[in-house]
Image (cartoon, rainbow, N blue to C red; front, side, top):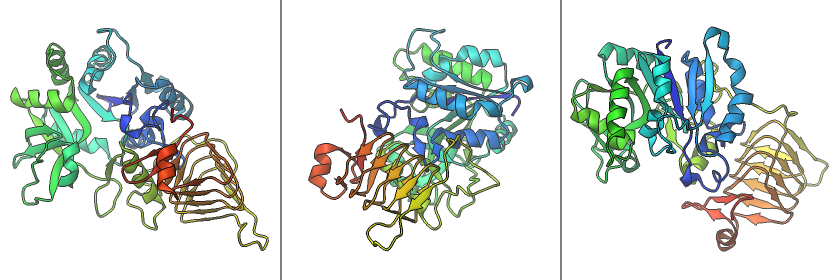
Length: 405
């Protein structure tokens, strides 16, 4: 990996995760209680031996920059030529903000040239998966590819929101269609489509040439899926498909784009199952993050009053959590959450520093950071009330924030 520069696109607005992303970049949102979304891509990098990383930020960049500075920077030693650095738009090449994924890399072409590496690994900072990028690099070099795309089989009904890939018998990419109405199925399995994971490994000179041509095209959307990949295929470049090798070690491959409220909720709640699809308890491929210095989680009150017992069942409890005479089931409580007496929390995600007053009932909800729920509040019980006062997803998940204006 010493001949590869790694660039992580971490500047997306995350509109489909609104209102959680109103003032926080998507990669910096909590996931699984103690982690941030960006931790999963960064942990893949660290476990793959990648020690030179640039995070390209834009929207609400302070939330990502602060987290990287406090949580990840101490793992990288400059005297060994290691680096993890956040990079907002430089406006060196032009004065625009990032117009698309390809434009994001194009605007940082000075960095690519400065590093003078053979390959450029481009990653997204908002997906949940475990992957050893070294295996992909070995495949890329063996095939002498101009571009290698990591691919995963997904149900064909989900492929309409993805980039769908067609390959020949040698796994060379012969077609690519972004968000097709009628996705091409995998040969021999009409229920699956071969989809783009947003993990690209370019030969540096091929990337630079493609970005220059794309920047000169006024009709381009400056996007890898819509423009760069199709143009490379048209020009006869060698574009290979790398089949995702999952380090999660489960029967089915795990890769999630948690770009919507419902997808975010479902991926989180799966973690409290007896045998979750995604394994956080894996010492061979650990997920690292920055955890606050907080005391252990605590449950209190069990004095014979059956309605005032501090209890948590089938749930994840982060440091600093106090359940004081309340009941929590099948939920995730992030750091420093407080649940007061007689309150009931079911199938919900509570982010940092949430406080639940007495006699509350909360079901199928996401409570954003720093929110205080007043005593006696009911959420997820009366749909008309929820729709009038909060954001409600397509599948009925209620999102409560301090920023719904």
